[in-house]
Image (cartoon, rainbow, N blue to C red; front, side):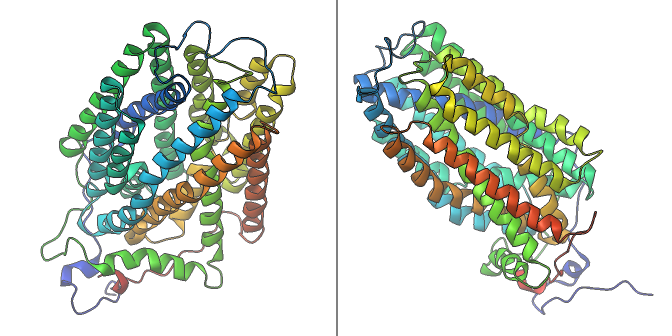
Length: 479
């Protein structure tokens, strides 16, 4: 019997209806180094940028930073709103920077992701790395030349216009779907890719904050920023020359057409069909989850460097090292818990772990030892990173291989949209409530995580064991 061919339009070359050509990579280690080194550069720069903004607003210069004694001194006085006003203003700057990168990345992710299904994955990997390099250089110049904070905005805008980290993550995950088989091997490989972010965060945050603690301002800000730019530059070269294209462009294939973007529209439209609503629900849960973790890092930094915590940069580095170790713990958790729990069960564990950590962080200010309580939150939230790779792996099983790029482009757009919507929302909540109840925003985070767990429970109840609804493979919509 002749093999069945999918329906294609008359404008599609004959060879394309046999499916895309897939090429094996040079070695088993593929895109992980890119995500690792770009992650180290970004994770090193982000907390330092948050601290630089806080101290610039508070002192007019960074020279007043005291790495050994912390950011402030004295007993906490709830009636003294000076530090809290700086916190609120700094949260506004974090919102501006986030919006400058998130808004344009919505469109770029929608273009580059589906395009990677047609002309290759490298376009969705190399382009955002180039944007990260531009942003890193811009941030380093602001710190080195003591430029106004407004100069950070063009760098963030260029970063978003080239795709930002969401497009990079989507491109890397789509690349993995080309070289792995569906099931636990793919989920584990995606968890390893997520763990690269954790390792990058541990190395980047700890080394950056220790760098600042040892050298102090301004060298403690300047040198890490230039080092981060160098790491991103290396990743760009590795992305161009070090990885092999797994979906090369074929003769006569258009580099871009509006029909390519319709791949995401197809996924959304079909996800609302009977039996396909589960994909829409998981996408919505991922949207809520991304909104929390995109915002929480900046809020935590602004919380602990101001009264009553007054953490020094090295203490902040140790905290983020412990928190980011959860990426690695999440990989181990998926490997171990996967023997006795389904993917949905492991998601519940991750959501509850994250909610427990947020509650402890909210109540830490009222405990006798605030610092220890905040560190205990990282232990409670040690597996909070499990849901993200599990949701991605689960969704990748629900769509055919020819639409993986469209799926991860949609995921990247959703992640960017989460930044656009939730960064202003959560930072506003923090700025308003920090004068009244400093930990209220963390309780809101915990409540949102419980809602996510409930929604995943609904999907789980309507899904049989080890079964997934796969969308119909219609190629004519992306020709």
